[in-house]
Length: 529
Image (cartoon, rainbow, N blue to C red; front, side):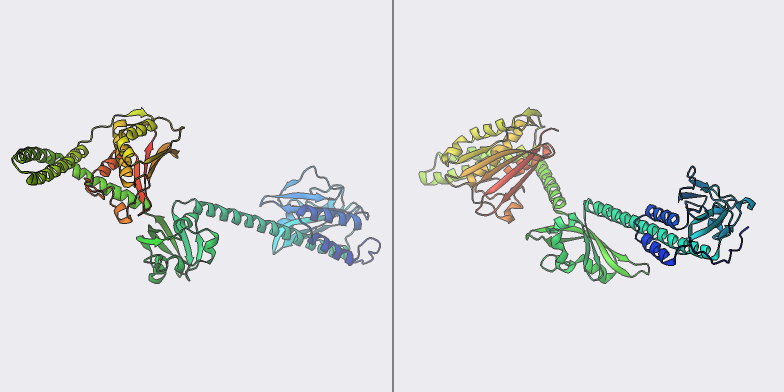
């Protein structure tokens, strides 16, 4: 099979000097891709060996465990077929599988075939090895049957070593680039996933430094992303902002916290409730390396819970009112009749006392009427209604009150609002109550702004803003409670009834107010049900 190399050293005239080999080494190391390496290799062989004895050269690379590929060859190398089966029955397959050289001075006497090179006599094939792995093979051939010299073999081995390491470096660079891109894509995917998460996520290391905070968590605390660079978890949950630091507590106790509720102070100074769960992060040895926390603002949930509690109270009130109204109203009517009759026999001084009694009886009657009205809510009569017409009817109904205080009514109606599906009589009752409250709260010559807007989710927003004295924050929290009132002579049921009517329309009513700065009532109703 393989022959011993000819020990003749007289290669002057065709064997390149080793400085040319060094130049080739520098040339291929600067190559950007495998194709460039191969092209420079073929050119190098053509310039230095091809003219002597019809030298040919080709590079093969291993594709997988079963095949190898002819990448490129000298101009005499056939490229009709480029993919070959990896078998020890052919020379290249043998070299790749055995990781051994193959040398013959007369291929016609060999059983193994050389695929990819034709019209050759002498063949020398060497494995391409880099980092102890066979990545392919190089084959050199002469068109004439001539022995390979020691100098040729040494030179070609050196060439193969250069090419194999150059190909390996390119493959390594491509692999690093691929994995870097993959890691970057995965990082981008994870960041997108984390930032799209509906809850806030914060990760800290064992020293409490924030290593990750998603957009939702930034929104909850009111900080921008760039502002978070200089903020630690200790600052985020300091004693001025929160009653407890769940991250430091988790690190200290080395155990998760679940469904913890606390209040935090946002960047703008607003205090909000949040729910928190934390879990320690550990390395392979079980040591804690940090903490991940999942948080959620509970403002909406707390408001919903309060609305449900209020609804329960109102339902209980309605049931109580239904039973009491009849029992109270009849005796009141008798008392009023009797007092008025007695008043006819009293002097003017005592008649004033009778008048006060009658006024208080009328007030009790109003309370009973409101309670009855609340308890016996009629079913909604749905209709397509122009919301602006309903508002204008309420304003016309309250014209005397408006004129008496010389209130300026400013209307900002969105003319693009479609007809709204609602019970016009009951919604008008809401408008009457809210607008009357705004008029009564305003000073003489004040103003009331009524605006309508079409908002997201196909809903209409009605805002009624007055220039009155406003309501304290403490009173604002109780404004919808039954029998709570800040108005002299009020029953405290008007806003409770408004709240119930709006809720029955699947809407929402809210009041924002500051002392001496006026009050804004916002009503949101769905356009369709």
